[in-house]
Structures are given as C-alpha cells and as structure tokens.
Image (cartoon, rainbow, N blue to C red; front, side):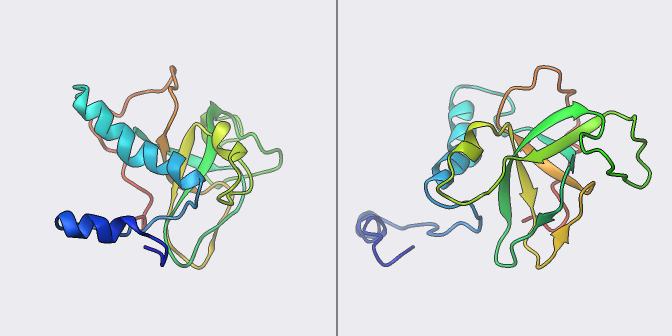
Length: 166
C-alpha cells in the first residue's frame, strides 16, 4: 500500500483487513487487467456455478529469452499457439523442429502503461522471481485468459506451475 492509499485505513475502521499486498508484478493500469483474470474472473465463475472456475494452466515453451525480475514473480502477457517452433534457427535439445508444441510469444514490452500488450494476449506466463534470464525454448507454465477451442484438457490437474513460481 502506498502513501496515498486512502482506502485501507477506511476499511480498517470497519473491520479487519486480512491482506494488504499481493506479491506479483504487473503494474498499473495493466494490473487491473491481470488481477481481474487472476482473482475476479475465477470468483465470478465460482458464483456462476462453474465446477472448475480457475484459469487453465498449460505447459509452454518460450520463443525468446525472458529476463526475470529479482524482486517478485511476474505474470508475463503472451500469445500462445500450437505449432512447430515459430523461431527459425532456434534449436531446443530433445525437441524435433518438426514437432508440434505449445509456444509462447511475448506481447512485447511489459511496462504497466502498455495496454496493447494486454489486447493481444491469450495467456499469462508464470515467471518465477529470480536474478537470471530464461533461455528461449525453456518450459514454463501459462494461465489461459482466452478461449482456445483446440486445447486438450488436463483432466487430472497434472500441470504444475513453473518451478520457483509462488
């Protein structure tokens, strides 16, 4: 909570505030978009009677190197697609260039004011907090924020989050 947050003191006068900060990194105004998908949408789905209201998690390979944030985990906006490796010349050990897989392409600069990066996103990569870079071809978890009609289901809930992601 910042110095100019006037809501928390008002809420504290009415009752107990159970949490005041969330360890995640988008930024404002894109944080509204991300937080809606992570918190509000599952709550609305649950209230609407959905049996599985949470966002679907899938395993994807990243198309380009991604620098990680050393202060907190990040939900990185991206577009995923089921295809052969979309980056010419990228070789991934153990993966045939002709094999189909889920690939994630960043929507570009992730600064908080860049709403265009949210417009084209169909998933949020779950990137762990670390002082390093994930190399292209790395496997990470992604939360779907759009409907992918051809998506195979993870009926047993076996897709875990990216190692190190909170």
